[in-house]
Length: 111
Length: 115
Image (cartoon, rainbow over all chains, first blue to last red):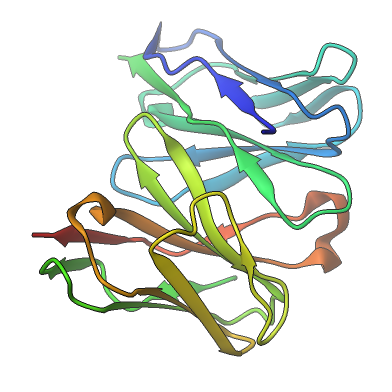
């Protein structure tokens, strides 16, 4: 069973701090890695994706991928209360249609 | 903007009833998915479809079936609803034309309660 593991949290950070969300995956053939944000009572929406080792930045968000360690992370700089949500890590393997989702990490940003 | 719509936001059914959940997308996506989401368990894939009339079992297909007669529409059927099927059901669509960044676009979800 291919798995995606996340710490369920909650992760609590003060406003303005950096929030660091982590994810590990078991399938070494995985090619694409996604971070979705899900507000309470809403459906998931994409924040960003990454497929090459290293960092990818988009505004206050940075995704980091280390395929050797099978590890992907999301950094949120200057965290805002509006960032409070559940963050889902998702992994897509090669040659398949399925994307495997982690159970999500709940983030609380305290004003 | 991609739009994925689901037929109901909230649904209450009785044990043993046949339940239909419908999903429609307007972006000509070839892939469509049905998930259920339960606290602590995350998103679990029930069925997916990569083309009209094609369907593949996901991780938890027992007690469910699907239908995809048209490209834009993907229906989830609970043949005989049971209380353990009480959940949030999410439909999603995607396209392989997006390449490595194949993003799933989700509908608003249907919260189903089976009594």
